[in-house]
Length: 460
Ligand code: UD1
Ligand code: CA
Image (cartoon, rainbow, N blue to C red; front, side, top):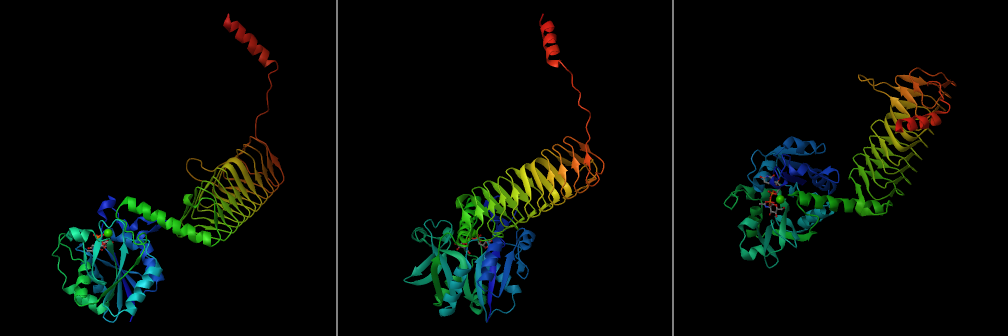
C-alpha cells in the first residue's frame, strides 16, 4: 500500500485577472504550487501527480523533479480532474489517495500527516479536512447529521439554511483508492455550474456510511488564493511563519513585520536583521552578520561578521568581516574577500576584491580584478566600456589609486603602484611606480582684483 497524492491545479484563476495560472504566483518567493507539493512530500506521500491545464508549462516549470503531471484539457470540474489524474497513476486499488488543492500554499506537512493518520485509524472510505471559517462565503459547506458527514454542498447549490453553516470543505481529502475509482464513475454534472464535483464523491461515500472528517485546520492554513487580496494575505502569513522559525533558530529581528525572507533563504544563528530587510532567492547569511536597515539581498552569499546596510546586492559573494554601504549597489559577479569594504555610493559589477582591499566612497568599479590590501580613492571609475565592448581593469596588491582616477580599460596597475588624484590612466602602470596624468596647474595672480575692476566698469 502506498500513499499517492493528487494536486488539483488546472484552473485558470479568473479572479486574478492574469494570463498566468494563479498557482505560479509567488508566496515568499516560491510558487504557490511548490508549497503544496513540498508539504505533501514532507508529510511522506510516496508520489505526487499534479493536474495541470491553464499555462501548463509555467506550472510544470515550478515543480521539483520526480513530480508527475497530467494535462486536463478542459476544466470540467474537480471530479473530472481527479479522474484525469487517476488515468496516469496506474492501479490505486490498494493505495490511499490524498487530494489537495494547488491553490492553498499554507497547508502544513503536520496537518497532512494528521489527516492521513486519522484515515488510517478510521474504518471509512474517505476522511476529509474541514475548517471553521468566520466567513464561509465561497466554500462548500459540510453537511453533518449528528457527528456524521453526509455531504458537501457548494455555495451556489446551497439553500438558506445550508449557507449558515460555517464548517467548510477545503478540497483536501483522503480516499481509499478502490472506493474513489468506483465512486468517480457515477458522478454527474447535474448542478448549477454543470461541473463534475469531487465533493459529490463525499456524498456518495457517506451514503454508505463511510466518511469521517477532521475539523483541525486553522482557517489561515487552508486559505485558498483566488484573488490578489488573498495572495497578499497568504504572502504575509507565510512570511510570519518563516520569520517565527528563524527567530526560534536564533536570528534577531528588530521589527519582524518589516523583514521579508524568501522560503529558499538560509540563515545562521546570530544573524541580525534590521527593518526593511529583503532576503530573496538563493541567499545565505553567516553568523553574526548584520543586514539592514533598508537592504535588498538577492541570490547572494554573505559570510560571517559582515555589516550590510542601506544597500542592494544581487548575485554577489562576500566572505567574512566585510562592510557594505550605506548606499552601495553590488551587481552580479562581485566577489569580496575577507575584510574588504564597498562604502558609500559605490557600485561594483563583476569585480573581485582581494583580502583587505577597500572601495570606500563614490566609485564605479566594473569588470575588474583587485588584489589584496589595495585602496581605491574616492570618486574613481573603471571606464570599462568603449561604446562597443567591455574591457577589464587589473589592479595588483597594495595599490593606492588616487581620488578621482579614471582607469580606461583595458589597463593594468602593478603591485605597490600609485596613481595621482584626477588622473586619466590609459596605459599600464609598472609595479611600484606613480602614474600622474594631468596638466600643470596655472595660476593667474591678482585675478580677484582684476575681476572686481571689470565688474565696476561694466556697471557704469
Ligand atoms: C472547491 C470545492 C469547494 C471548496 C473549495 C475550496 C468542488 C466542487 N468544490 O470549490 O467545496 O470549498 O474548492 O477548497 O470541488 N481544478 C482543476 N480542474 C477543474 C476544476 C478545478 O484542476 O476542472 C482545480 C483548480 O485549479 C483549483 C482546485 O481544483 O486549484 C479547486 O478549484 P476551484 O475552481 O477553485 O474550486 P472552488 O469553486 O473554489
Ligand atoms: Ca478555489
